[in-house]
Image 1 (cartoon, rainbow, N blue to C red):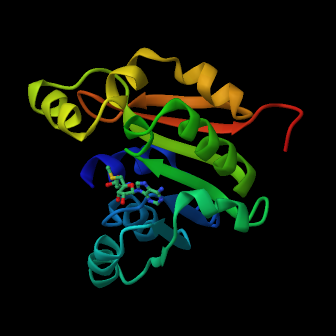
Image 2: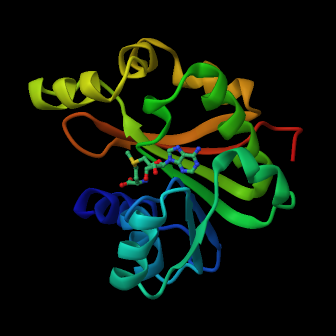
Image 3: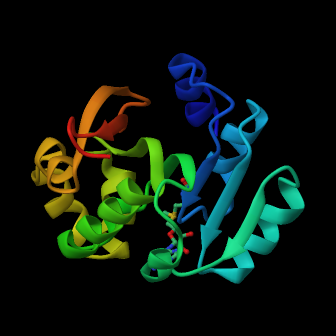
Length: 175
Ligand SMILES: C[S@@+](CC[C@H](N)C(=O)[O-])C[C@H]1O[C@@H](n2cnc3c(N)ncnc32)[C@H](O)[C@@H]1O
């Protein structure tokens, strides 16, 4: 959470922009937005994580929802759609689907926090246990991946030894 807080402080986003945090888990990224004043909603399909998040971060609205159901949300419903440490854990097809839906739901920004470079031994071990997607994710191009989803990076910087944030907007000419 300190890394999320530091990055958001640096980004100085308009706090009038509402936030939809996808795959929110225990809600730490959603809470970092909410404490800056953004009206924030977090969604995840894990009810147990959401119950913990609701107790800890009452300022955030948490909804139980699978990311495959994002098509039920109207275009441009949220100023910002954020995705924290989710994309590296899924295959390229689902990454594309989620990024496209994030771009559609966001009116202004899609903000992704994830690995920007290989982590230390502990990180690599955890990700090895969690599945096969992390090395493939690291080896592929974020620029190309965002572009395919209709997004371009307007700002990015490291958030830790291995973490990175990418602030994306719709490609010029697309809404
Ligand atoms: C590594 S955690 C990241 C949690 C949080 N964003 C953070 O930064 O701490 C990944 C989260 O994705 C959620 N998740 C995975 N697949 C999902 C899906 N299809 N729909 C909704 N949530 C999903 C998991 O339940 C988990 O909470």
